[in-house]
Length: 308
Image (spheres, rainbow, N blue to C red):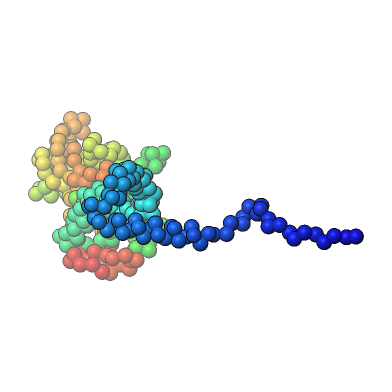
């Protein structure tokens, strides 16, 4: 005979995640305790909870301060990155501005010299009555060529051709030797193969200036007068004699000044040493004498000082 199973007893063990049922009496007791503490705390300074609150403040206060000190750097990280990015941008802007100011300061003298040279060319064109094509010296002659030449950044497109006079704001530089479309080679008057006709001082005595092939402090010219009896005076200025049709040298261009005069007993003639007005070791802006109205791919300084 099969017996019925007894009623299942209440389970004493519960699953780990299952909470025991809340007791109503326990909840009522907790509520009453909270109300009692709130009532007692209303007494202010005489509250029986004041000593406990003071003790808690003295114990927990330093902990809160220390915690805030530790946490503050971490909470300030986003603001730090934002401010750092802004400061980095400001630093880059300041560095760029400082670089520009240093560059302006470093080139101030250079720009001032260029402006003075250009003004000098304009004045030279006006006083000499010649039209000038301005050009920059961009290269020196090869040492293997054994010649004193420079290359300028103007050629046939600028109206240049061989045997044109080249000057700067100080005086005679040389003559155009050969040209390309955009450049020209200039033979300097200090070259050993250079010969320039010149006139001396108020006497207007004519002679020939020969270069020594030296550039710098020792760069000098030797003057041999046509009239061997003529004696040039020291410190007399020498200007170009001029050639037929103005080539390769136009007349009236300052060349240099007499520094020494000596006699040749064998040739019974007078010679002079000329110190050029032009500093050939610092050539930059030059002007090439061209006929008025010459077609050019750049501005031309006319004989009246105006630009065309």
